[in-house]
Image (cartoon, rainbow, N blue to C red; front, side, top):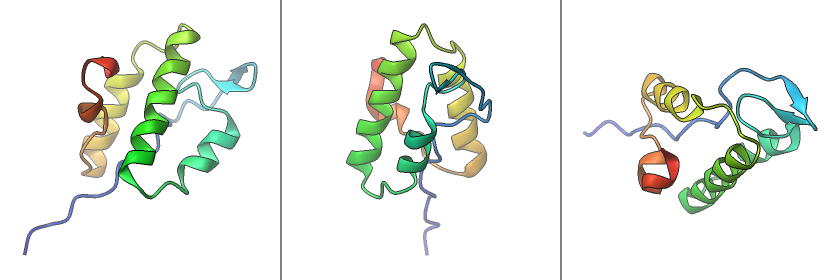
Length: 91
């Protein structure tokens, strides 16, 4: 039987410092967004959420290493990184 891959983890990269008008300096999420991600079960919803996070990071001049750290987090969790499906937008 094939081993089932785990669901992608939250976009949170464990910095958790809310210094940008209530947004985390590491992932650009608000506390409400962090809680909302946990309720997303469909892949399409998770991808849409990640696209929102990428736009937020770009708009805020966000944490440049976020994508690299998130990819590493996915690997450690044994999950396929959803950024791969977003292509060049996630660079």
